[in-house]
Length: 336
Image 1 (cartoon, rainbow, N blue to C red):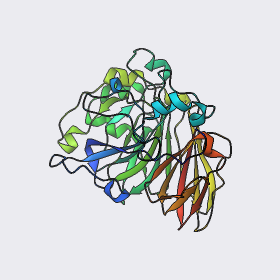
Image 2: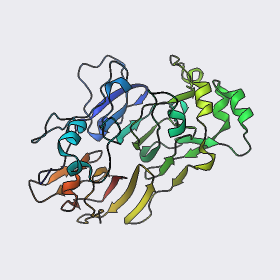
Image 3: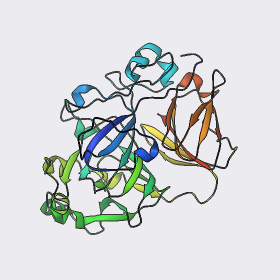
Image 4: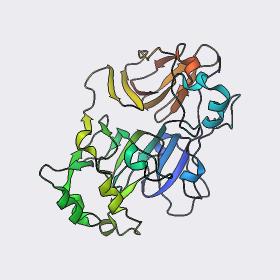
């Protein structure tokens, strides 16, 4: 993959019973033929999940939206271009893209859940480990997330409360505001609260063990719970989750570095160009507020508004230049 343009992918909107109404504000067009009352809680921006990992009605691979690679999946580009796309990173053992990048928008609390680590996921072929990170794009006053158990809570307490409304009272509650960052290693009990919009970076897994689904609070239809596996997957005590408050000045900062991915935040004034990592490695750029253009010198600069995501292949990374055209915040995500 020599020369060319960054890759813009067609997002995949995912209906969810807890979904909100903010994705349209971020330029995500909702389907005209959607059934009445359908709410969309997720927008998959960069995804390459095989069909067998998803419900029969779901689509897991985002396709290139324009240019010479239009209509191709990331799996196809990996097979064709290899290190020109991924750099030194490796695809999944099945040959898929090793990251899932999406937006989540909530009108209700998500289920109280936990994702398995590599050891626990190895118990079944259809499970995959999942670590994830949240960057808060928007939040109503009083909105919160739930992450980890309160000090003094024992596993006996958790086991007695799992599957019931009492479980929520055992969780730590964190008020959120735009610009907050939360990292959730595999094994961390958590729930994204109502009235929050986040960008989520995660390993490519849809394996979720629900411990409670707020069915009594919201009177929504019950979904299967996975109490025993959820309890078995709770291993986060030695891999603590952490949080960062919003940046209070312009500049750049690292948010997290994991065995799978890293994330940096760039807060810019108009005309600024962030100091992107210059290694010839793939990165994903998302504009969380403001607007910017991406120029690799080989074509017309790409214009990005709030909620826009672009994938810069490794072969273009050294030449990519980003310029803010207003006060702008950009997330830069790379593979490990």
